[in-house]
Image 1 (tube, chains in turn brown, purple):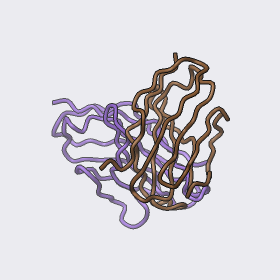
Image 2: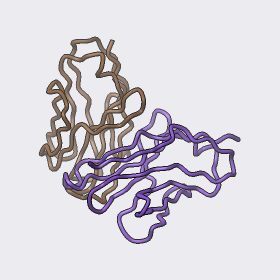
Image 3: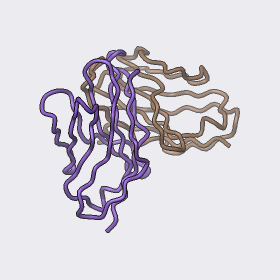
Image 4: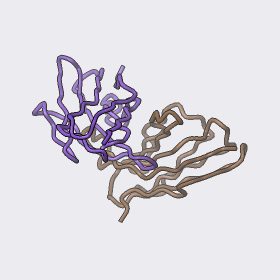
Length: 115
Length: 115
């Protein structure tokens, strides 16, 4: 069973469109994250959620709206897509809120290409 | 400010030789340090972490890392490299000022092991 799963794996779309990426974890973790990895492989956190509550919003444009319907799911909706949004988006989870020592488990990534 | 630096973009080593991937950190308070590996088109996988205790931490796939407080370093090592170790390696630190909800990643070091 996949611990952290994301759909879709690839997403190709036109500028100005709206798209969503879904993430699910079956580890029973409390905390989930979204990361963006750019073309130079630099990895930066976007959001952290703990038990469905937004904890960290790392100066992400408000075109990006995460939603956590329950603590096992954290979806990412992106409005009015721009060329600069092209990247690989990773979802991750960790066991406890505020668990600085906790390991993060990453999904396989969603490669978003905006044309 | 909390930060992590990986001074080498790429490390080349021959199979069977020892390898070192360097990481230095800057944190306020106790550091919570991690190494992750990313294989092509995959998500990040946890290798090892330093929380407290012994300065030499052993992890997955024969990797280990040495925590050096005076040099603020956390270098990743392996006594004998394998071609299959070729991947992108990330050092990371937990930002405890955010209650552990934010992880700061280094820029990554690409390890290339030649047969």
